[in-house]
Length: 256
Image 1 (cartoon, rainbow, N blue to C red):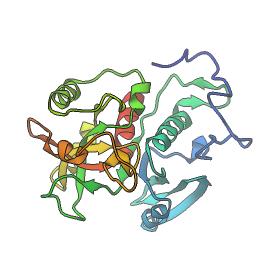
Image 2: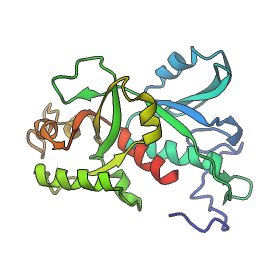
Image 3: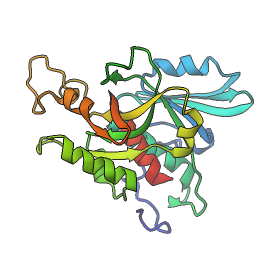
């Protein structure tokens, strides 16, 4: 799925700043711990890091703000992604580059490092039995954004079943990006299972039309949210809407 690891990656592909930091995140490889909390809003970074016992690094680049510190004696980072799958495409690829590419030789490292990433975010409910301020755990993501269709990936058995059931149940307009399903990390999911509601999170490419909202413009997917709310596959249902999870799950799965 990647280029030849022995060939140097071109400057147009791996873009670094003059100080050697990765371009958008403005981070150096030594900044990155193995456990990272990602939030959308840059203002939430300080809300999380205020609970750290100490903060060693504060770095900003555009909407990407990062604090690295210690919590219960363990090194952690909290990073803001901003809004949307386009930003997640930047964040996940650049985090992976920071730990799995040698910036001095521009080659892929033989020994790969895996990061543990948890997203804390807000979303809109699609189910009437899920109250405002409920905690929800995303077991799968439904990508309505099209991002992961740019990457070569093999679906697992449940992702294939969800995609088939969605195609059979939902009259999805052909003009829209092809929808896809992606599973979150099962090990992380088991850590939190039982502490929150669980379901499928639909990831949209925008806040208004892509989530069925209409101000002055009409949408192509009539009664979109009602259709999504009725979807069922065994005991799985689409519970909520937001703008990042499909990309987080999809890219994390591919990058290991």
